[in-house]
View 1 (spheres, helix red, strand yellow):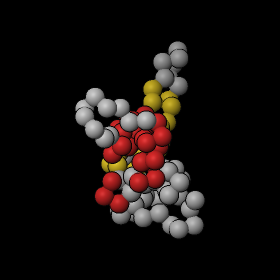
View 2: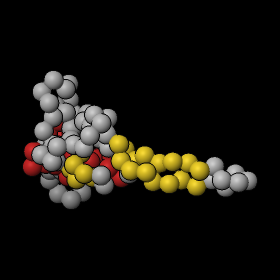
View 3: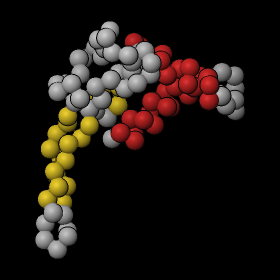
View 4: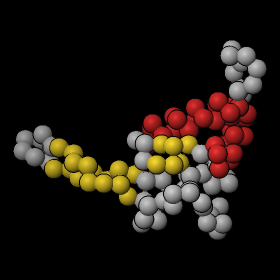
Length: 103
């Protein structure tokens, strides 16, 4: 989940930084400059909802998968998906508005 969301976010930044023909490759700096712009209409929809980025480009309140390990017998354990967890303890707001006190 986190890997997919990371790749889709990088892809969005690459797309926004793209200038010129299809063969033109944006620089790392150009892609990095897009990070803080992935807000508003440029938000990224990940597997677990919107990826809300702070003005400094950090993910805010990104949900993570919570799993439970059942060790089983003979080392043949199983993972069970329990649900999603958020650092703030509750789901992100639907509009992805980040409190102003967050850096």
